[in-house]
Structure formats: structure tokens, C-alpha cells
Length: 381
Image (cartoon, rainbow, N blue to C red; front, top):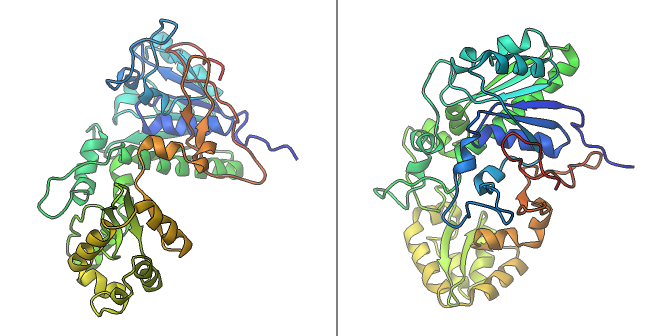
């Protein structure tokens, strides 16, 4: 049986920019949807966000696509519309009458000024689903920026190396990505509902609520105990040893994720220290959490004396969760990462998929067109 693309024929207008909205657009493109990215004359701002390692022009002398823009814009076409003009607004309205989904990321009130809001666009298309991203919800005109949201939602505080240490943000725009996942879930729910009712919907997602929802056990700790969880670097507040980085004698950095007392006993055996597993300070996870500092000191000293690659192989043999600390390049070079890479397009580097799930009955696009130049159809991939 030939697998079909589940969203083939679905039409999406992407008015959103930067990361969260475009991630959702690429997600649907990978599953077969037609995605038209509508940009201002200046284009999505991420087209200009280049690292020092990136060149200004491609091998053909054209302006090169930034890596940041390429992270979220495969499989799309680009159309330039100056929505401050009546003509452009008329074009958008016409496009919306034939669309299934609109993705937007305007500050509250701005879409209405451009006649690009849900009420206006759905008036002639009651089946339209409109996904709207804001920073703080429809009642706040405050713009949302990932780094600020990471700070305000507690992530930067928790990500500090330890109590009293400087807060630091995640190395990717984590709140944007969390919001993208929330919006996908909302839109998929709206599509399911539309199959039953024939009616579209306005789906709203805020970056703040997305971030707060992802605090998970850290939020629960505060809500249950009334005490703020404290930053532990990469350590875990309720499991030890879990997440701390160790350096072995050959320079290999590794982490342990020991979630049970049985796994801890196997770790001790692999390290040649079976007595640690019967020490009253370390015998149970509760005891290990209480005596975190003593155990971490012992593990740091012992692992520093052994070959890290040999230790990881032995831990795998003993079914102890552990892994090497990889660079991004090393992670993307893993055999299991191959299915996540999009093929190289003409004049373009490889891309990264946003879809990381699989089905026995439908498929994702094998190839996607490369991120488009501003106002032009995509290059064939």
C-alpha cells in the first residue's frame, strides 16, 4: 500500500514570522500541505539573522538564506504583500476564502488594523481555522520575545549552574518551540472538530502560557510544597545521579540518568565500587538526594579515572541509562539522526525536519523544496 501525505490539498497562509509560527507552517508542509508564506516587503526578519560563520551571498552570487530562516521555512512559497495597502488586503482576503488555515503572530490589535484578523478573513470562509500566536494573550499588547519569556517563566532561573549563580537562557528559542507545539495541537484539534461541524475556529496560543505549561514537575514542586525549586545546573531535583556532567580520563564528557536503585547498583558495579550501593547514604534514591554532594564528589573522582568510551559501553551492557555529551554536529551525524535530515537542494544546505513521528498508514514528504527567496516560489529540492 502506498502511503499518502495526510494533509495533501490543505492550503495554509502563513502570516507569522520568526520561529514559532513558521515552525508550524513547515510541519504542515512536511505532511503535504500547500504553504504560502506572506511576507512584508522587508521579508521575515530572520532572513537577516546570520551567524559570523555564514556568508552574505551564495555560490551563485545571490543573497544567501540565513540558517535561522532555513530552520523553519522548507516546502513553502513566498508572496510579498504590503498589508498596509488596500490592494494587498484585498489579495489576502481573496486568498483566505480558499484557505484552510491562517497562521498569524501579530500583537493584539495589529491584525485588525491590517484587515488580517479572524473575524475579517473568516466572514467569507466559515471553515477557516485561524491560529494566532501572541506573547502574553489577547488582552496584552506587549510583544513576546523568547529570551524575555524564558526569564519571566522561570526557565532562566532554573537553568543557572546553582543557587546564587547567574541565570542563563536555553541555547535555542525554547519558548517559541513550545508555543509552536501548542499551536499544532490546537490546529489539529480544530481540524478534527471541523470534520464534525463544518465550522472553522480561532485558536489562540500565548508564549507565556506555553512556557508555564512546560514547567511540569518544577511547577508541581512549588504548588505542592510552597517552596521554589532551586537551580541545580544540569542536575535533577528529585533523582540522583541524573543529568550531571562528568569528565572521564580520555576527555569524554558523559551524563548518567539513573532512575532506579537497581540501575544504581549496576552503575556501582561498572565503576568497580559495589560498596557504594549498600552505603546507607546512597542505597535508595531518597538517600542519594539527601546526600547528593557526597555522591557527586565520589562519582566525579571515580569517572575521572576511567576511560569514558569504555565506561559508556559497559553501562549500555548493564542497561544503565547514560550517554556522551555530543556537539550539534556529532548529534546530527548519529545514524539514528539520518531520517531527520532533509536532502540537500540545489545551492542549499540540508535542512532539519520538524516532524519526528511515524505512521504505518501515511507518510511525510521525502523531499521538500528549499526555503524560498523573498517573493518567489521555492527552489526544487
